[in-house]
Image 1 (cartoon, helix red, strand yellow):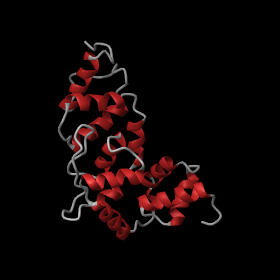
Image 2 (spheres, one colour):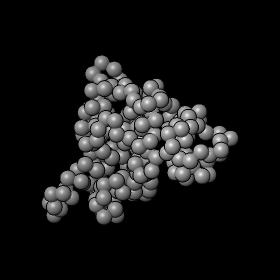
Image 3 (cartoon, helix red, strand yellow):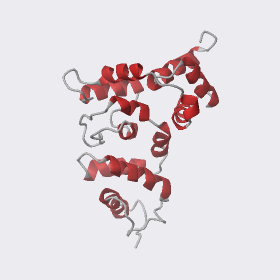
Image 4 (tube, helix red, strand yellow):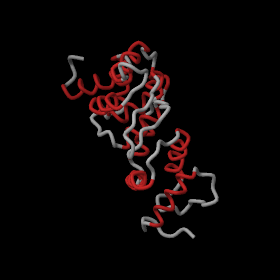
Amino acid sequence: MHKLGRGHRDKLQQFMAITGSSEKVALQALKASDWHLESAFDIFYSQPQIRGVVDTRHLEELYNRYKDNYADMILVDGISLLCNDLQVEPDDIVMLVLSWHMKAATIITVAVGEGTKISCTGYSHLACGNYCLLKNWPLVDHWCQFLQAKHNKAISRDTWSQLLEFAKTIDPSLSNYDAEGAWPYLIDEFVEYLVENGIVQNLS
């Protein structure tokens, strides 16, 4: 590691801390992504051959860093510490996707800063490809505004899964949106919100 510059060393340490991977695997993923962390995470989680064996003891230690002292779950203080470590704000869309990938029993919403139970095995299911998807989704800011204005409850994992599918398959202009489709009610409400606020043209 001594041959690397400080910036590369920092990225290597961050990658190893989050993934629990060895230095060799971390270097392989980072070099393959030209030292872009997000791309390296995507490579690591989408290509099993590069992943190798994840140290479950490391995952347990990582989980214990954030979990509540009196309950086997990550609550508000733990979420705040996690956000600080990841250098993101608690209301960042990243935390929604992170919660979904960690298979949280309750997903944190932008509108409701409630704690979420996250199993330790959830860390090994983190896949940054979906983070990139929502981060680059043209309607992501409108979705967050919609949640703040219209929805003040936890959102099921199934709805988040359907939202990812919606973001991948439906054009941002909603030109291929089918009102008779089998989208969850919350997504249909979001579409109505977009039309009512003039964000997209009336679909009828």
